[in-house]
Length: 274
Image (cartoon, rainbow, N blue to C red; front, side, top):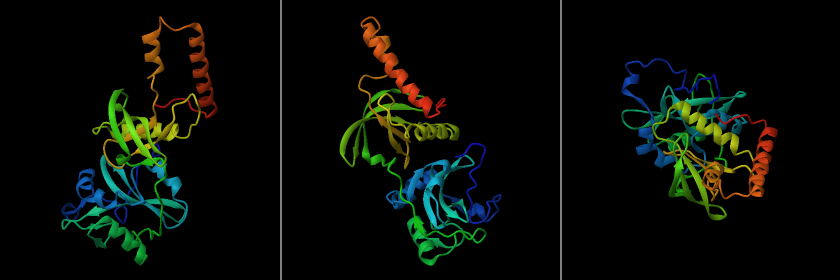
């Protein structure tokens, strides 16, 4: 989500304070999603998971382009349709009524995928206020990974956001060992955004002396950053453990390679990952 902006997710028209009628209805929260929504849409190509708007808006380029995602709305994780309309991206909240049907403004369906299909087939706008219609589903980019492709094998340590694991990743080219950073379930919205910012910055880099980010898994908890596994562990830990054994040549190699990686990041205009 862009700094200094609120996620102006809408419930048909501009979202207003709850009325008595609204209290009899509910927005799809993360808990609801886990029990009744995820199973219906998580395999859909247009479902992108818990991704901030700054990551998805560049994917929507033409009128009718759309995707489905989770987002943070006033401290609550909700399900939303993001669609390109009249030169900008609009965001519409998906709601669940007391009879467990789903709707955005008026029309109800028994599940979210049927609701999306109805809006495409009938060319009915998501909201009467904006007139935004959905036409072309935008598939997840290859850096958005499924949790099912990852098998956590061994705890390696703990990072700023959660635990780090040695894991097995099953991808298009087969199985490989990776390191996985996890996000604590109770993490704040600010922490989630920092977590995604790190992945957003690092996944663009390709350099032999910078750890490679393969992607993120954001369809369910815990959120995960999937990265290159370094068998020797962190350089700092290695130096502390072997400080009496290292030759000057090895020390010089470490310093040269680290400098090479930092020089690359400097050229990419990276100052910090905080």
